[in-house]
Image (cartoon, rainbow, N blue to C red; front, top):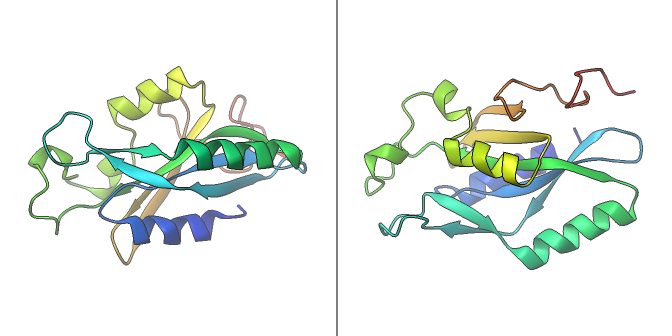
Amino acid sequence: MKGLKQFQEDCKKAHPYEHSGIIFLDKNDQWNVVSVITHPKDWDGDGYPEGFEPNKTDWYRKKREILKNGGVPIGVIHSHPVLDEVKEAPIEYKFTTVKESSHPSEMDLKLQRKFKHLVRGIVVCDKTRIFKTRFHDVRDKTVKPNTCPLCGARLK
């Protein structure tokens, strides 16, 4: 998948915060990923950013570029940082296993439905390692890259 390795590197650099990007099909129906400037977001006001917000200007610029080049956005990818070494992080934001952190949160699924993304990706990482990269649909069913997110058929 074009752009995935660079996206994973961007996720490690963003640690302990989340990073995000756009998943799209190029004109050859191959999956691609492009990073978007991402800001930490404290959704519940407890002083710790448990989420993220893409920079809207960068988001729309990248989306226009994808469409201009014949691509079709199909979803979002973001990181789930492993926070064991971040002592000040509230316990509810510390994942107990890599497997657990490779699944979407309730907020992830809510936003996926709201924005009608066919697929979402999760990169589980710390500052130096990528533990797992997983793609899923709105039911949290794993979707393989370069397959149709609706029927699972292999693309070209």
